[in-house]
Length: 261
Ligand SMILES: C[S@@+](CC[C@H](N)C(=O)[O-])C[C@H]1O[C@@H](n2cnc3c(N)ncnc32)[C@H](O)[C@@H]1O
Image (cartoon, rainbow, N blue to C red; front, side, top):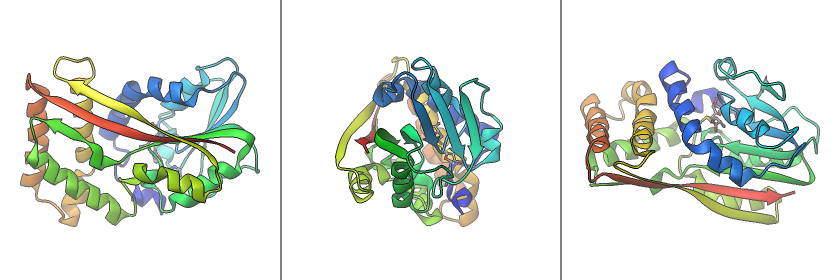
């Protein structure tokens, strides 16, 4: 079920995009998570395992378990003495109540059939007084300048296609509601900004990542007939040109929620 929802797939090119996104965003997420030394931590939807390994290295003696639905993603995860990966579904976490000090998910809730159930499961496996943190997408918050109308048309199709698969690319705006409905009362919302411009260190990598998002869904969108190849190519080409445009800039924010159980 959830595997088919995952709009990006696990092709090597997509895994390379995800690894690049980890290189861009892990440090900020680790500051947000603020994991204490010795904590027993769960990552739900651990993908390539790159964030789990960085979380394990963020403080002394941290142990991380990563749950991931895709064997192809787990197969690429790096080895680390304090990190283990297990194949499983975020909707039905195979751990007793209160098993972890810290439970987090990043870029996962947009890809699951029932995000409310996943957040409830995350809360269930967190010990009383433990922490839950998530960081998610609201793809409507993306901005490029000079304007990229062909990209914007392709991005709108991408967003609708993700919804048709059963995901929700706008879920970042719903985090407070999801956390309240799961039973959390001490909730903090925040954002992680992505602000890049031509000549700044992360600019080309960020634009490349957004192109990669479209490319990861190319086969599916064309097969479904939701966009023509010409329109998709026009959106991609526009962003390729933006990479080298000396006046180009990009702004986005990730939505985050943290709560104490
Ligand atoms: C965009 S990746 C993010 C991976 C990682 N959290 C990170 O930040 O790099 C989302 C991952 O969630 C996994 N996933 C999707 N649905 C899932 C589910 N129901 N249970 C567990 N993992 C799931 C996908 O296979 C994919 O590896």
